[in-house]
Length: 217
Image (cartoon, rainbow, N blue to C red; front, side):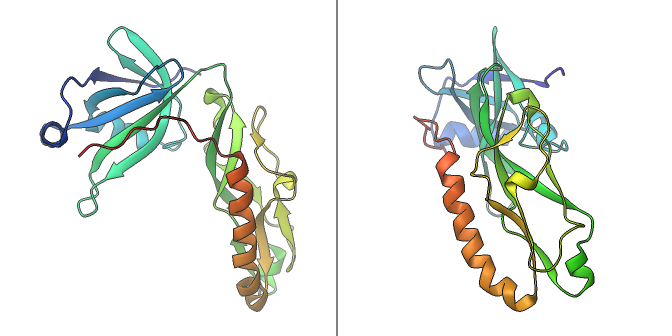
C-alpha cells in the first residue's frame, strides 16, 4: 500500500515570535525525531495538509512519508498541540521510524453488536478505549474490533480473546481486560479496579522515545 506524502521545510528560525508568524501565515511549526536522526529536526509545513491527513479514517494511526528537501522519512504523528480556545492546530511532533521495524502504537477499540447481558438489563463498558499493539508502520489498523454480542452479564473479553489482523499483536499479558458487561452495581465497583489494572499493564509496554524536544510557542 502506497503511503501518503506530506512535504515540510526546514525551519531556520525558532522561538515564539517566529512560531506565531508561521501560524498567521497558515503554517505550523513541527519537530521530527527518532530513527536515523541524531537530533530533533525543526520543521514547518502547511496546516491544511496535516489537517487533511488527520481527518482521514485512520487519523493519527497513519504512517506516511514526510519529505524534507531531498530526504524522506517514514513518520507518524506522536503529539499534537491545539489552541485551548480556538482548537486550531498549533504544533506537531513527528516520530520517525523504520519501515522494516515494528512499532508500538495505541489503537482505538470499536465494539460491534449488542451483548446478551445488555438485553437483560446489564450494561456494557470499555475497560480501555485503546489497545497498545506492535506492528509494522504500514500495518497499523484503524480500529481493534471487538464483537460483544456473546457476552452475558458478569463476563469479560480479555485481549487474548480478540482476533487481531495479521501482523498485529497486543503488547499486554493475555488476561488484560478490554470489554465487560456488568450490572449497574457491579460496574461501579469494577470500573476503577479494572482501569487501574489496565493502566499498569499498558505502562509496561509503551515505548518512551528518548530526547523528546520541548514545544515552542
